[in-house]
Image 1 (tube, helix red, strand yellow):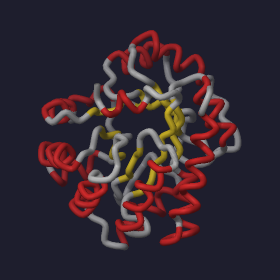
Image 2 (image 1 turned 90 degrees about the horizontal axis):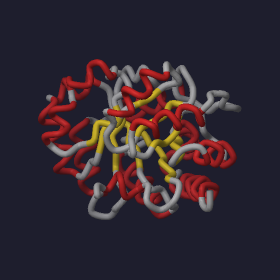
Image 3 (image 1 turned 90 degrees about the vertical axis):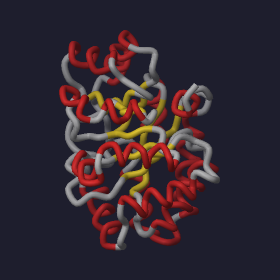
Image 4 (image 1 turned 45 degrees about the vertical axis):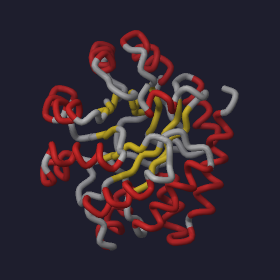
Length: 258
């Protein structure tokens, strides 16, 4: 069983996101370790990029801070290699096509495998163009994780049937960011996903409170949270380890027993 599959074996999964290199790679490393200790089941790491089109202002600004601090793809891979000696939960990169192309598709996937990255999420890779990356991912055992938005029934079934790792159900149209309420009919979306695949599905975009996380996890296999964590990092900077630990613990506790 893959590490990603194992992440969903112990009840509902909590999946936090952090932007790599914000405010520094050393802090990112501390945060990944702290998030695992706080109960994170799988951790997403954003590879900083100058034009992250799926992201709202909170994560865009984090990307800018990370790039300004000198974070590069190679430096991020080195940090992952170090943190992988300590952390056992799956690690997934969230990135865009441009950084992968610049780095070289095969070289990127090879480095993912060497450093201990289990999967990648690429928001600007449409399902119809999945073959741009799928062969390289498969060659190196990296799960190319599919995003499913609130779209047509036929399209949801088609994407889910071809999914790897886990299915990322997008709770809201638009960019990432904290939302006061989530109105999408997630229950219907996840029901469709389950018709097409046995792979777990987790819900992200807009989740920030324990109540929202519990509500989303109740109709799926887990909850994904990014902007709320990145906001804490923006606020506390080098001292964000404790606030992030406490937040992740609170969110994971909300999912226990569902």
